[in-house]
Image 1 (cartoon, rainbow, N blue to C red):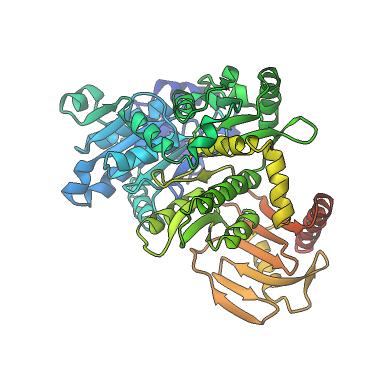
Image 2: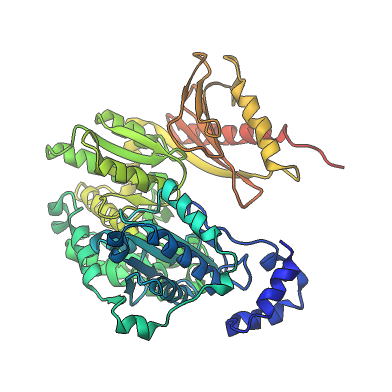
Amino acid sequence: MEWQVEYEKWKQFEGLDQELRRQLDEMERVCRQLVNCFSDELKFGLDGMHGKLGPGPNRINKYNVRKVAEGLAQYMKEKSIYDRVRGVVIAYDSQNQSAEFALEAAKTIGLHGIPIYFFDQSSPIPVLSFATRYLNAYAGIVFTTNNDLADYLEVKVYGADGAQLRTKEATKLMEQVDKIQNALDVEVANVPELTLINLITSLGDEVDQAYLAELQKIVVNPAVISENDLCIVYTSSNGSTKKLIKPALSSIGFINIHEYEEASVSDASFSSISSNSALVKYMAGYGNEVRADMLLMIAPEGGRLRVAIKDGSSEYQLLSSNQLAVLILHYIISQMQTKGELPRHGTIVKTLVTSELGREIALTFGLKTIDTLNGFKYIGEKVNELAHATEHRFLFGYDACNGYLISDFVRDQDGMQAAILIAEVAAFYKSKDMTLYDAQLELFDTYGYFLEDVATFVPGEQDQKTYMDEVYRYFRVANEQAKLANQLISEVEDYRARERIFVQKRKSESIQLPMANILKVKLLNESWFCIVESDEEAALCIYLGVKATGRFEGERMLSELRDNVIDCLKQFQKVTV
């Protein structure tokens, strides 16, 4: 794409949004900014469209939003009239310009005579997922962000099942979006006309109340809550779950709950959550004042949850995503077993880069664990499959990025479900004069000390695919004596080739997951690492995990594994002069 040609097209467009025109005028002083905005174009992919806000085809703006919405409308027009009249649910969170873009999507889709269900205030991702099924809509769109950056936005599309579009359907939608040559030419209706002919329905609190009613049903042991005075400090970071989280906690019996209001205000600049550690520090001061047992932090989009508890030194410390997951998992299945309600074919769903402690716990209760590719989208897909299967029942899902799901009335990560369950878990252990920190140590004593970490590695200036080809080749030809971190390699999982190689047995089998740029290596001592390539960044993401008998041994093993993996990757770097 010749960026100058595309830039002139936008510059000369008479109907260009005035704010975008102002930004273009400012950018004329810095050519590099114009090149970034106009030398390429954002694509709608399997996980939607995401990028920085700004003018041009390589930025998220009202015209690219219209392009995605037009693609969805064309995709739906190929379906039956029954599917089309089911309509589309549109939601947005507190992210900068989310509400404006949601309205643009409504005007674009509504022009095609497709009904729109529009949230009249910011709503979190799990409520959009729930609403799509509750209203029997054919699709859902949400405007959100997963990385807490003020100048970044994501456009996600959901299917009638409440999950992000499956790969097959997403591919068809991608084709429709790609057919649109010029986003500036997409036509839109006006809201008054759509309202007059009843094509836009404003959603009040009916959906919220129905969602809250479902939340109450996930409580495992109500007596634990009613007999407890657990003290909770929470924040609905940037406000998208502010209207829901306190009613949710109150409705199931928690009374001693306190909002950290400084971080709960709707703030598109995200100034109140500059970092997780800073937020914990600020909330800890208030937590100490009210003697809180735990701090709950729901992410701006409402899908992720972070929890801080007091450790052995009485300081609030963040639980890792994996630590929080196994606390919830163990509580759910152990309580169900105690009550005689544990299903024989209960199933746990997790991504392949998460802790193996969850699998270990599930196994001791006779439950199956299924791995998916990285990303909660794939957990949602699997949850949908399990909902229609007779031989399995979904019990819990989690990823490595603070995403959790307990009940499938939502088909994406749900920070409020997780908040309710971890509060119940804390109340349960408090009734036994234990903290969540004590519970965590008890799990380690029972199952082994599992530790995980994430590292990044930049291959250098060479082509990433060529570099990774060598890495894959190196591990694929490993023999029975091949070692890493002084441990023999037991398995190599090549997700490019969709093949699992059992190194010690000299056997292989196919991997029943979609192709992905992921390589996972397992060692005989149950340590593992996983290299994930990024489509957007030069850095490789390396997930690591170890199993030890104690904390210090685990930290030593994890450090040694990390260093050995990095050293191994360095040998494939090309030295440039």
